[in-house]
Image 1 (cartoon, helix red, strand yellow):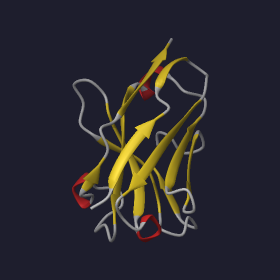
Image 2: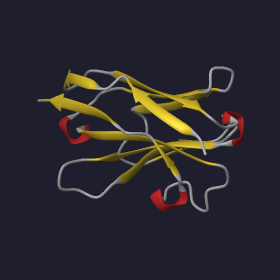
Image 3: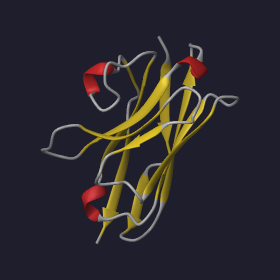
Length: 124
């Protein structure tokens, strides 16, 4: 099992940028598919982005494609989410997740290990 700790959330104006980080410990980071999910108040948890163990393959939700970039540094056991052109619909708690062999990279039930989440608030 891997422990995950997110950081980098905060309050930003619409059109601005934030970079989330997720530090992993307790496992072999380079073996894991890493992903970000988010949950807004009163809404279902939703997939945001994922990256495979080597970093060569990435997946994005349609709502963030072209604005968000997921990346990882296996030497630092860290995954990042660069969020650009933020809008109020991006307001949510963002969770970092990990799985060795997820059945589906976009399905939350595929991931066993979750961080505590970091709040992102985008003001209009």
